[in-house]
Image (tube, rainbow, N blue to C red; front, side):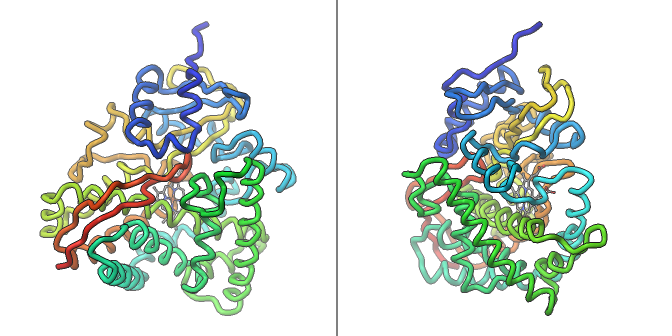
Length: 430
Ligand code: HEM
């Protein structure tokens, strides 16, 4: 029997270390080396702090796993990489489930589709056109604030951070004065690995303390949205929160855990992701004045910039799957119950699919990236994310004459959702 390709201890530690994801070029180098040896490789659980898993870095293999939702499940093991201590704590909190929150990403067929259908129409382009005006107003206000703060700004703090947060909070019916609280809670839940982002002293905490903080954030979030649900049941509007609050599955309204899971996944999935791809697009334009001038003159180029920024940044860096039955992937024998990391960063930089993958190429065609995943769980908010980015850049291009880098940009330390946490720029208004 052929031996199983297994990562050396250094690479194994790096793949699960949040700090590696802040060191982007080295991370991409590492993935290139790993992928060229084997697109599917075993990470054996170095230091006994985590379960062994398969790391999938090849484009074709990540696509295959994503589309085969019968063989690769989002249950029962956690879908976001977690150390053993974190998993044990989640199980203690939930009474046995590894998922701290029950949501679309933790459901499999047939229940998954029943829940997804509840809001699928809402997220389609036809419905989104009805809120385009509101999104544009948020974009204009954000650009107003940026220009008032300029010429030297931190694009992440001024623009790409708050803008998608305002949009997602608007569709969830959260008033603007409560947004800072929601931001804190979602960052504690999902951005928790980077001390600059959650500002809660997590760097000095043990894994158990971190998990406790996360659990506390989930509870606060649930309490807050119980109020929104009650309100939307009495006074429904056209927002997605009203759709969720008044949904029925198999003849019954959603139970509390499922409903909260829905709000949490939308609130969490909807802002740091779009923020990261928006900041990435702006960084690319700031470093390429000719490209900036071209798109300013010809807005038809914007769609290519948006799509390439999403690939180039790959804000959702991985998801995990559990193997449902013995199978083969990338030449390896996988056993029922095995745990798998599908790494979108690695897949979206696979040179067999993308020529010169580290280059930001707005004209890249085709650009069949996997940043939104694929298959049954493919990102529900992908049309919204693209729309938000297009509208913001239309507003920016109308009102900016020039943009230049004004200092070093920094990435967040996170294995899950990651991207720029600061992007200093000098803006010249039009
Ligand atoms: C799922 C990426 C923006 C809501 C996902 C998945 C990825 C992803 C990789 C998992 C796909 C899979 O398992 O195959 C992104 C990126 C975004 C973005 C890169 C921005 C550039 C948004 C927005 C929303 C959203 C704006 C909504 C407000 C969701 C939801 C799911 C999801 C609800 C779970 C879908 C399911 O399991 O059926 N996203 N996302 N996302 N995303 Fe996004």
